[in-house]
Length: 604
Image (cartoon, rainbow, N blue to C red; front, side, top):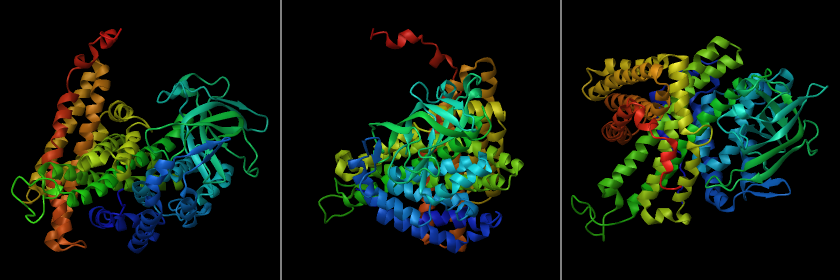
């Protein structure tokens, strides 16, 4: 199985040299605590926990899975002890306010922590990850009493949290939610209904689980305008061990992430408390969903990284045939796989996506830091400004990076050949676990509709694309006279123009043909992902070139590898964007003209 090693050198390159996180943190209230020494210590200590405790449980957790007996879920062997080690280290409250027991460090450090945990053992990382979403939602929308009651144990990690949206009859279309919330004389509500696909819905890691639940009050309007949000704990505060009418009815049998408890949750007249204003549950839940979607985007990076770490050593050690350019190791029976062009293509694809995805997510982390400051300081203008910027990135990060993570996981299996299909080698598990990332927290299609239909056309009329492409234009203008960086400058200037052109063309066509949004959205999202990653690879190349010229913190070979990987990305992966651009602008007829009955003409 792959042996996880924390990619500290690449992480520090982005933090210190590309994005200048030390200066960024000095701009944040309380950010002065996040000194370079502190950040390095966090990465080092979390790296040890991930390498020594979490990674060894990844494969065994998949083989054992979770068990449900008498309504109680038992996590795989070693998970409970690992979770205790995690909370003993104070890791759950890393980025949450000190008044609730947290350390008050920037949100982006929590994302970096999540990357390490998720790469080492994604199913384990889901348990505290879901709790973070519950914490964020209560912190933003809860009353003072709710915050004081629920945030301290959630921050400490002795309580867990979930997000309860999906029901048997509805997933994405939450307007069909049927779970009922009946008001009681004491101000509480009785919650009745069934939720499915609830990650961490029931487990043995914490003494209590706080469910954040969508439900309808009596007489509420139809559709999403009539949904409210509720806190429904497994056990009421002060009554640990006494049933509150919340139970796990079943564990889903799944393709992957088997060590993560995915539950059918039954609410049988459970006592709950409204979170936020009545009938505004969807607006409040988006706090949770945005956090979860960035976290799921991180899954794309995590599985790509782990698969690369499993494939690279194998490609160096496994011998098969001779290189086409001649023997590389004449004394051996054959040359290593890494000497073959197609294997190098797959490894470089993994490496380019891993390091490109990491840079995209760390950049988004800086936006998230500013947004959280707006929340904590109750500065709504600042919150909305940065939430708007992050809102454009979120569907691209979630949709594009999870698709690329799945591709990289499959490439890792391919490099191993037939041995990649054998369970004991651990590569096929990464592919199985990666598959869910394109589905939950909104499928790739939903992310595409959110990006094009909602964020780009409806809410901003293309402004969000214009704002982001301004970054590409600035890069191009400042590097046109730089001999080594000029090729990237020209390409980014062309991408900036093309991205805006595509956006305008789709918007104009969609005014007359609304199906255009649906038929173009996937290609628009994928184009946006490739275009955005090109910008971040150009940034890395720019930094690496300057460090080679002037001296940097990393070895010379590290910077040269950055330049070579950037060149590979622009030459071999960015051309995919052109095909997506072409497809996005095609008329809707080719997709929409076939009558539904003709799809199954030979099958009925």
